[in-house]
Image (cartoon, rainbow, N blue to C red; front, side, top):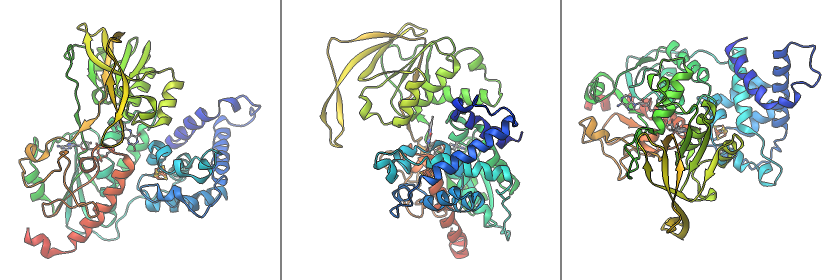
Length: 477
Ligand SMILES: Cc1cc2nc3c(=O)[nH]c(=O)nc-3n(C[C@H](O)[C@H](O)[C@H](O)COP(=O)(O)OP(=O)(O)OC[C@H]3O[C@@H](n4cnc5c(N)ncnc54)[C@H](O)[C@@H]3O)c2cc1C
Ligand code: SF4
């Protein structure tokens, strides 16, 4: 079985437990699953009413031509569906897996809004592209012409990779620098493998390597190489470093052993799924097995932590959030998935401190929602006298991320930032105030989504190509 058959197989197995025993005994096991996947994708695609007001498309950040590829899938014309789908999306199989579709395309499907359940657009997009990889329709990147000009990309997450793909297709020389030992950014080390299988990410990186993109890994810009040196080596530079400064909690006991940051916990878990030796996992420091786990936070990172803890064999998993369900920032679909897997949500609860070292409990303050703030969102208020202690052996802090202070770390004060610390870049061209330097993804938007980073990366690549086509501008630097 090929890698892609395996991925499809795993996914379909999840979808069809009831049909598994339904008299399909005479055929090859994998053949049955493949047929089931074909039928299911076609069935879903044929539910699209071709309504003529494709809100799904306008709510997809890439404006994917969803109605057309759904129609072609329904007609069994998968290769054509793939061609249309990949024309607007650099990594459709990744978006199909991890876009919060309930907030984007599917949430705006006319059929969903008429109460009949959305067409599962993301699943079809994933299916089309997985099939394309399996059948060899995904072609190697072969530039028609080679140019001497080079672009240095700092950060190998989806923003940097999407730009690398577009620039390389046009024959520009591309070098991607990243501090991690593998490319992919949060696709590789943030998002858990049960949502995004790692071979799916690695096959894209291999495709870029085969196209001649050079990856310089284990290299932190600002430490191992200066930003200035990178600017000196390349004709243009793209900053796509994401946001990694973890928001912390200052409360009594917050220095105790057993309190960990979400990104460290998820990175360790992802490294284990690659088969790496991870001493902090082996020692139990970043391993939920056999523990009572409390995750603090209400966003998608918190959802990834609770669902990872369940899979690692935690004895109980609770998610603490200071507002209520309706006001959670995370996807409702993810909350539902977590609940189905046995996670308990403790709403309107905020941590006041921690007991024990190693930690053995979280001191909880109950909250209620008060008057709306300037943004219209109700602020949580304390309820006096309802404190209690929630027992815990592992506490995972998932309170969000902020940008690192790049101008300071890179000794480049001319790189201007917004009041949130994100890099100031033109929202259309993605150019910063430094000539020939562009910025995309989370480091510009703040913590956002993969699909937005892909869009930014593609747009920035177009701007960089325009910039490189003006030699006078390069010479003037
Ligand atoms: C746990 C978690 C789960 C998520 N789940 C989803 C999801 O399901 N769906 C979704 O759409 N979005 C999700 N997101 C958000 C999404 O992952 C990000 O919006 C997206 O990855 C941003 O892409 P990026 O290219 O800007 O940055 P990143 O993916 O963060 O990549 C940045 C890269 O830059 C490198 N880097 C940083 N500083 C330096 C330096 N000084 N020198 C060299 N390299 C450097 C980093 O090592 C990293 O590889 C999730 C985020 C997290 C944290
Ligand atoms: S890229 Fe994301 S939002 Fe756009 S169609 Fe695919 S799953 Fe939907």
